[in-house]
Amino acid sequence: MAASVAETGTGMKKVAILGGGGMIGQKLARHIAANGLGGQEATLHLHDIGFPPWPTDLPAPEERTGDIAAPAEAEWLAALAPDVIFHLAAVVSGEAEQDFEKGWRVNVDALRRILEALRAAHEASGGRYRPRFVFASSIAVFGPPFPEKIGDDFLCAPQTSYGAQKAIGELMVSDFSRKGFIDGIAIRLPTICVRPGKPNKAASGFFSSIIREPLAGQEAVLPVPDTVRHWHASPRAAVGFLTHAATIDLAALGSRRALNMPGVSCTVVEQIEALRRVAGEAAVARIRREPDPAIMAIVEGWPRDFAPERALALGFRAERDFEEIIRIHIEDELGGAIPG
Image 1 (cartoon, one colour):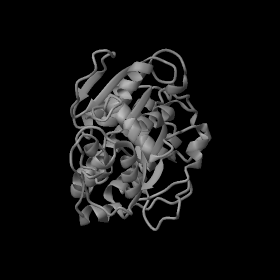
Image 2 (cartoon, rainbow, N blue to C red):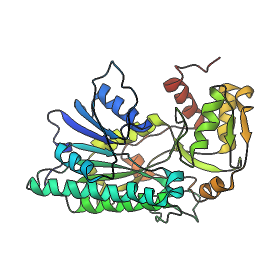
Image 3 (spheres, one colour):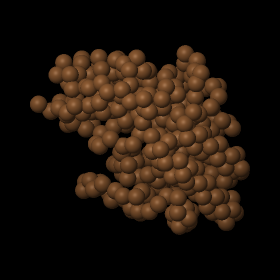
Image 4 (cartoon, rainbow, N blue to C red):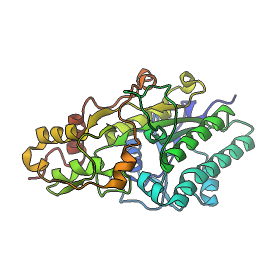
């Protein structure tokens, strides 16, 4: 089987980030621009429907705008022939549930088209081209009933369209890797919290908003009971997961190419108590409880705790507790201090 270009360890890596205009995509891109990838410098090629301003103190990436599900975008990626591809582009959970057709078109059809284009590039190269392909999956691939902690052998049985789409994506990445067309890995991200900026359409957005808005002096709405337990990691940890997945030797994964990422399991009330310890009563008082049955129905089908032994053994790391997640948000997004 041909060696992955991403494993050659020579020259400058060519890195493509699909979904490179989003929050995690931008943080990942800026990290690679500043630090390289796997000890090598990298040229960055970002794809999304739009991009925020790029920092003037970092080397500028190539930015391409377009619909990731359009055939021309898969053809562009294959012609570019990146050494490493991060596939972050997705219709998020709440939107995928509300817009059924869009979720399947973007989350499944686009991925199939991309993988087929990469297969064609692999075959045209005589088997020499085999990029590292890092697929951002989700813990939404799991559905109830759950054990107390989800281990590495728990079955995928999603209860949402988004979860089903991510599970199908994992299987495609695994099969195209088995055939040697790509060198793929799927990492099941926890809910990323605290997300900076404006809320997106993810059903999980309130986990961030009940921390982010109170820290900024604004009111936040909590649509679920305090007893809801969930699995979290910071944006900083997410970047670490992705870069680690792009550079480790995947031989240790064998044929099981999907991994549960580490995280912090806590209840909403534990989130709020961590906020109280960090920012005081005034911040907590800005949280307004407003039950939303639609959100509660989605959240009830999500996993709550994990024992990610395979990922930990491979060197993936997350935060120790939710208070650390809040302090990382303050450090990375608020200049190290809570606004007065």
